[in-house]
Structures are given as C-alpha cells and as structure tokens.
Length: 154
Image (cartoon, rainbow, N blue to C red; front, top):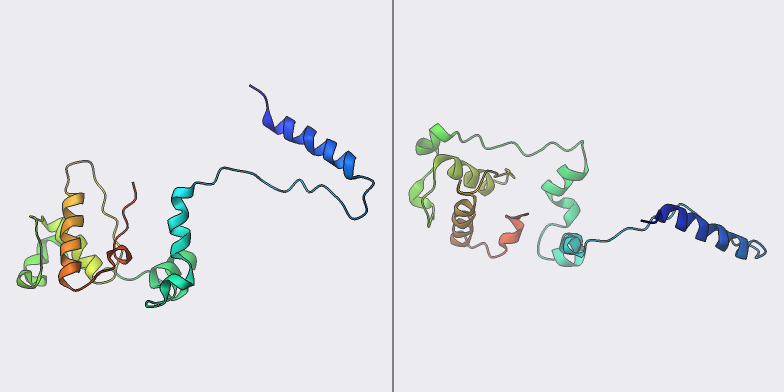
C-alpha cells in the first residue's frame, strides 16, 4: 500500500517548482481533503434561516443556543419521578396508543415540557414504543412538524 501523504507532498513540491517563477503565486499546504458524508446534509439544511420562517430562527432556538454556547444554561428537567407519575400526570388528557411503563411516561412528559432527554437502551426495552406514543401525543396536540420535537439517530 502506498503512503498517500508522501505522494501528496511530492506532488505539491512539483507544483511549487512549476509556479516558482510566477509573481504572487504560492503553494499553501494548509488545505485538508476528506470525504464528506452527505447523509448529514439534512442537518446542515436545518440551519438555513429560510427554512425557519414560521418558527424561531435557529440561533433563537433554546436547544441550539445551549449546544453552541457554554454560557447558556440547559433547560431544567421537569422533575417528574417514575414513582410520582400517578400524581403528576393527567392520563385522561394523554393520548398513548401503546402501553407505556413509568420510565417511558417520564421521557414523554419531559419532551412535552421542552426538555431534551436521551432515551437509550438495548433492543426490546421500548424505545420505539415510546416514540410511537410521543408521536401520537404530539399529533393529538395539533403538532404537525414532529421533527422539531423528535430526532432519531441510528
């Protein structure tokens, strides 16, 4: 296998020799080439201010400010404990389409109140079930842009 670093260095030396006599020409070796993963393009497009016309601009978004500015405090968790959901949650006002255990209900309640919990676990622990209930809950509340409330990364 060939060492690409040496090949690039040799090529740049040859280019430098060719442009040495040209006024105001030089070879700048500070450039870096890499593969761009286009699957992340949607995330870059989300930051386009033109896409946020009917919503808060990206830099006014509390979560983005928190991610990019260490001085911004994270939103506080609502504080619903698994053992206190019966007292804290009005289940008649919820729209769960699948069974949910207390940890799933806590995650849905946190998201409903503007925090951004991370839901993780091995296969079979109910992550997809939680997402289905969250989608049903948001649709019941008239939310039609669910991507603003939910991002799933694999």
